[in-house]
Amino acid sequence: MAIHQDTTAGRTSPSGSGSLTSVVEMAQPVYQSPHHVVTREPGLSPHDEAHLGMSSFSNAGHGDTVSQPQKWNGSRRNVYKILATFASFIVIGMNDAAYGLEEYYRITYTVVSLVFLSPLAGYIAASLLNNVLHMTFGQRGVSIIAPGCHLLTYVIVVFHPTYPVLIIAFMVSGFGNGLLDAAWNAWVGNMANANEVLGLLHGCYGLGATLSPLIATTLVTKARWPWYAFYYIMVGGAVLEFAICLTAFWDETGKKFKKENSRTATGPEKKGRLREALSGRVSWTLASFLLGYVGVEVALGGWIVTFMMRVRQGEAFASGMTAVGFWLGLTIGRVVLGFVTGRIGEKTAVIVYFVIAMGLEILFWLVPQFVVSAIAVSLVGFFLGPLFPAAVVAATKILPKHLHISAIGFAAAFGGGGAAILPFAVGAIAQAKGVQVLQPIVLAILAAILGLWLTLPRIKNEAHTS
Image (cartoon, rainbow, N blue to C red; front, side, top):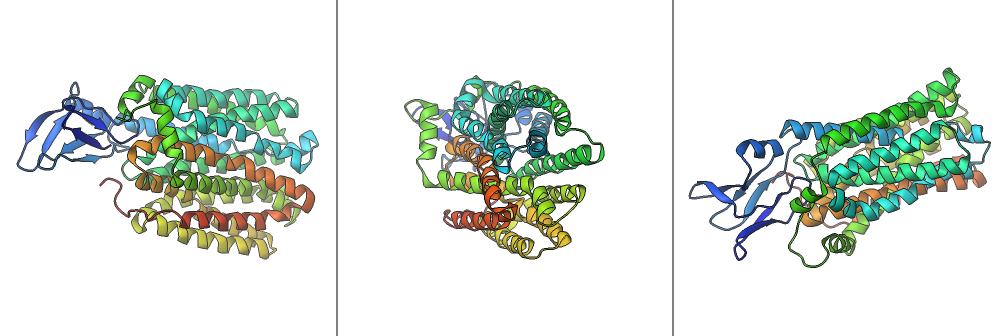
């Protein structure tokens, strides 16, 4: 949070974003020294400030402000909110399982790929509506709408309806995923130690994506359950997500969000802010980067089982476990490398991760052995893992603070569309050329998004708490 003193208006207004940015009216000094004045917001006691996990220091000599970003463990309430975001990302990760559809519905690769493509409509809608929903309903609204979309989708799927109805249901879940991707990435990305906390947040996505094929594969190949039995578990997960998120963010209303994220610019705020975010090259570069990255991630995770069975001649259970290995590697990479990225700088770290991942992808492609492929794809997941969190942190360092919510939200939701586009494209091409096209397609997209990353401006390699 950054607070700038407006001496002409006699008030302080925020230039930053994030759910806890506050408007300070006529802040009264409570302690003075020759070097600085500590200010307290009217109506907030020291206990309230500790509860919000925030502090601000105004330099009396220069009229500027040094502000501490909120900490994930700055209060019990913040800890509970962080745990709620973790629960949401576990559900989003588990959402990517679509095991056995082609056999059950007796459809081609191209048609089954519509399951991956259908959430795109939801992601696009979320990227456009994220800002206005925050301004109208706040994080409370996101906590109702997004888990509600998950619950509605999974209830429909357990009844295994006709395939067109299934496609529409996954559009609804895509909208929920897009809202959560945008809201929680933008909120956590503005915290202290953002690389580490975002690594844990996205590690929870990887955890869900690891559990998903493990559970689905076991139910289908060992217990001989139909593919849709997995979604009974998803219904339970969505109910828990709804309850946890709603209680955690109940106080975060639209009115509060407007107050905490107001700005001095004239004109319709929500329209102007989103338009400003999208008028710059950086927002579109990051959005395109995430579009390609998430597409690679979900394409590998979604098609690896079929690839290992058809191309590497693996058994069903062993092939399913390679998907588990990929997502497990991605999860561990996000958690472990999140503590490395911030220390060597996001720009350099991401380049190193890309080079290693592309080398492993070439090994996976050219060495036709099941065990080598299984190990290689797990390591690819490990080095791809921290790329999404690093991109979000890079956005907070490059872009002005008042654009963080709109820009990061748009990039995260728009990027989530990659989870629909690339897996669909792989399926369509695989129908004509065979599923072995997966590896060269993934390698080409990795090279393309590395090129996008190199076009970003220099990223300040400084502590996020400074």
